[in-house]
Length: 546
Ligand code: 16G
Ligand code: MG
Image 1 (tube, rainbow, N blue to C red):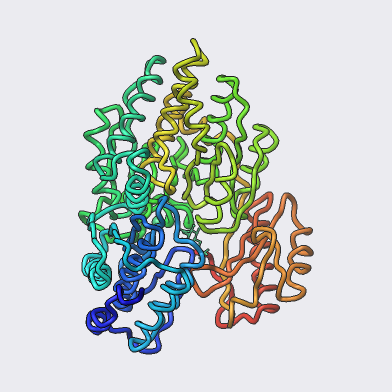
Image 2: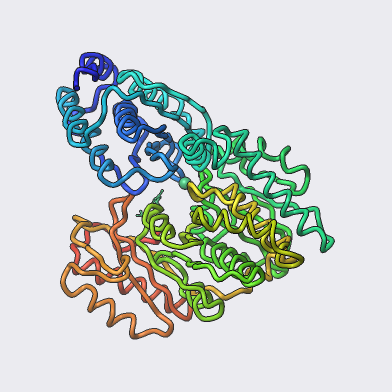
């Protein structure tokens, strides 16, 4: 059956996308990511791989060219599986093998993947491509196209897209339109329809017109918010900051900058109590913030977004009188106060997953309604198909207040991008919930008070000497490290600390929280020193985790 793969054509094309010899890259939690000039061959090969995956799944596969919140000079690529999910783990390994094959070995690796995965080579293949606004992205996405074409696959290049829009389109394409129309226009229509319905339901209380300031990280989010805005029919006005017309992508702005530096982005002028938010470079993360009357900056991170959403959905279920199985999935980075609030005040079950969207997404699928968020602002809510059907049915059958609540929940279901965490969708969700509850940003912030925390990173000779268990909350190796951490944590109140090898950078990350900033800082520092001593630290001392 291998005759159906024209390896001659692949070899010829591949010569135009030669691999720098010796370069080794790994398909990590966010795909491949490195300096843009090293990625041409990787892009070509991911085009090839997407064709194989498409044939094997008999579905459309997505390829996104982006390096998210990384500096403008970087780039990256990841594949999107049929239901809009992250690429399956066994294919991550194929991706790594293919990217690292020397040019002459490429045909052999393609053949072995095809055999191992029993790829039906005569099957048609369709690949949808999206890219962010990096200067290198256009050329690199052309290399992906070349790869797809070299194996005879069909390409739909959608050009500039946010990462979640690509996930959405792939999901729609493979579910026969049940999830929505597989175009950006379809995406705007679905979200805006749900949002306008919710805005109408909220405005019974009075206050209709809302404004939000959005820091777009000088990225693709700005372009897509401009396309969305006319659909919102003035129910929400958007004031875009860092819209890419002046500044550099992700430079001193964006969700990652705001979260890690705990300060506003450059260019954002905040009046007291004004709601502001930041997207990252490919618009799959969002954090909120505001300044109080005293000029103090308040960050509202992914944990507090998840808490607002979880609480609201729980209240709707109570109102409707349905006891569905709702759970919140976080990572070890979730602020201890958010976990405590959800468990003790809201009585919502909370689960901890390993860092990385695929782990959270996977866990969230176990619930009727699974809310998942990383503290850094990536997250969404997944509704099982049966819940979706049931809620929409109840919205027709029930009466009065119950009916109203079921209708709100039905629209909420449509407003979430269930294929991936999505800054645009999450922003509309938050705006709708605050409007429905009649809450100010301070009222939201006051749900709980974040425990002071600190992140540091430590350079070690080989970060793989650190292995963890219990969703990265405990270190298994090197020997003695967890005991050392336990001893240090005991010295402080309300304290907690963990270490993990980064999945995107060659460092070990350290997280600590405690009852005061001073304690959190000290604890983080002491744990870093323990890592330094027990895990083979090199170079300078620990650095802040920016
Ligand atoms: C990637 C992950 C993100 C995670 C981050 C952790 C995806 C799509 N993205 O950006 O979820 O928070 O890595 O980085 O999974 P780290 O391993 O370097 O701490
Ligand atoms: Mg991102």
